[in-house]
Image 1 (cartoon, helix red, strand yellow):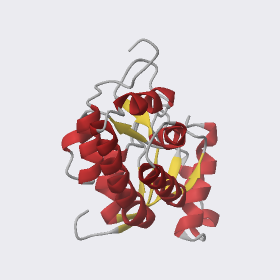
Image 2: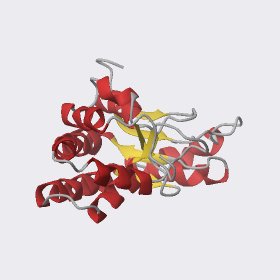
Image 3: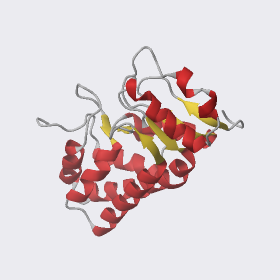
Length: 206
C-alpha cells in the first residue's frame, strides 16, 4: 500500500483487530474493519456491504454500516478511523507506555499486573493477548501517579475517538510479547511491554 493510500481496508480474516496490525495499515488507509476474534468460514456479508444503497454513503457512514451488517455473522467486528488512530491513539499510547514503564521502575509492577488481570482476554486459553479497551478502563483503579492517570485518560479519549463503531466491547487487542520489538508501534509503548515482562496475560493463578 506504500504510496497508494486507499479509502477502505476490510480484514475478512481472523484476529485482525490487533494493535500491531492496525499500526501497519493506518498510514495507508482511511478506515479499517477488523475483528480481534475468529470469523466464521462463511466470511463477511459482502453482497449486503456492497449494495448500491450502501455505496452512496460517506466512507465513515459506510464503515459504521458495515459493522452493523456483520452482526449476524461475526462475533466482534469494529471499524477504526485511521487518521485518529495514527494521529491521536498511537501518540497517546506512546505517552502512556512511558508512564507505565516508569511506574514499573518505581516498584508498581504489581499494580500493572492487577490491571492486566482485570482486563478481558479474547482467547479461550491462556495467551499473550490483552483487550486494550478494558485495560484502559482498569488502569484508573490502580495506585498510580497523577501523571500516569492523566495519560490513561488521554489514551482512553483517543481510543474512543478512533473507534467508529463496534459490535461489542471486544474491539482491539495488544500482545505482551510480540509488540516489544515491533517498530511500527511507539517506543514508549514498547518500553512498557519490555519493563512489564509478562509472557501471558496474568490470570487467577499467576
